[in-house]
Length: 426
Image (cartoon, rainbow, N blue to C red; front, top):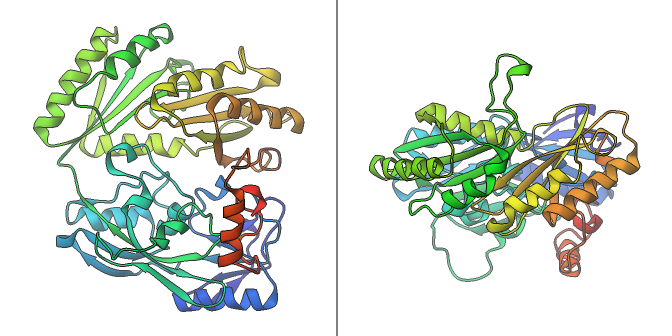
């Protein structure tokens, strides 16, 4: 066990007194048991890419890093299953699977830093989940360290496990408040032989036609997004050359014949909607371009910004994103503006609120409330430190809060793990 102090792991106004890096699950479980015996609190850290998707803790004695939990426990390419340490980065896993022409489509931002455990604990659900499923759907087993010092094993290494409670999925989205994921087992998928990314700019007054025409495709893309702002793909050489018109971004995957057919239909649909030009990226360029979009989900912008992700019906996504943007017309109140990404296949709306550094706390909080009102129940996924105290990560407390509190009491009765981080200050 390596112990040190690191103020870089500050959350809110608190920094840990100790930073621990356990070598394996046994050491991690022992660290949690020691914290419980001492009446101390622990916050788990992976790559930190989604650390703002929960509130700052109310107590923070130790940070436990999963940096050293990177073992490949089992990998059976012929069975399409893999068991890996929670500290492995998504980029490392991606390279390993690519050697066998396989993928695990978690679609998380910044894969060079994002870890398996952190992606699961945050409950991240990427834009391709309408095709491939959520991270919890791909998880077939897990090993979790509990605060009583034990290692709980859930599921296994086969896609169909024995009947009973699938407890591994309970930890997905729990923000590290129930246990520490040590190992995760996944079913992986054959890599699609063909991948193409289509990027088209269109006029704002043509938006309804674009949405209507692409929505009627017989071979839909695996991801279909409308971006207003979020300028990662707009690589203009000078700021004055940036095209601020909305874009529609479509990712196609499958066999070459299927993708060819889908691309012909897609371009025909856009042409009928009055979109004259579509930029097509293929191979590695398509993969990198799509990753650029994912990275922008949690990228910060301007002096102060925070980003909310709201779930809803796909048909409502364009309207919800428009409501978020028009909540602050002509630069918005006190210089506040909103950028959005609307997912036409899953119904997600990502809204990034940008504000000047001098904005007062009351206006900043009101901006968060206005965007939540526009896009529906939404979770914070990224924020500048200046915005964190004024924008609750969760918003409205759900009706299931009593069940959530009971689970916390059952799995972490001494409130060791990330106290206050989860919804309802759990």
